[in-house]
Amino acid sequence: CPDDIYETVTSSSAVVTWPKPVYSDNVGVVKVTPTHNSGDKFTLGTTRVYYQVDDAAGNNARCSFTVNI
Image 1: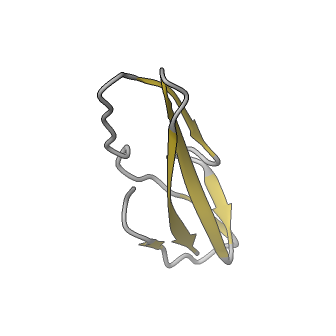
Image 2: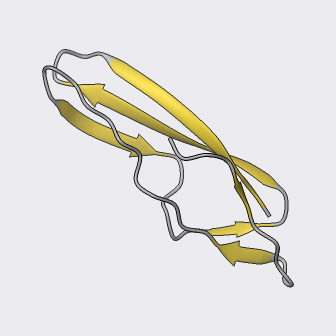
Image 3: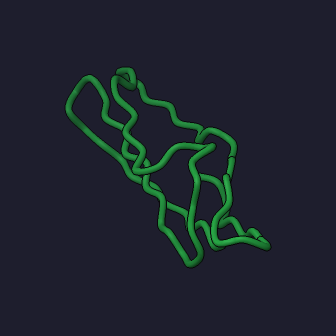
């Protein structure tokens, strides 16, 4: 996952972007589920963003980072 993100704003929200997380698997990634997407609008405060990746064998992994506005 990307590093934590810190944005300084002059309003109560901001559109925040980040690089796509990098993932790999020996049986093939079949599903990537984020709680938020790059380009979403975030309001003042701290929001934790999670990515869950599932593979064809039913295994999954999760990573997270925070967006701080």
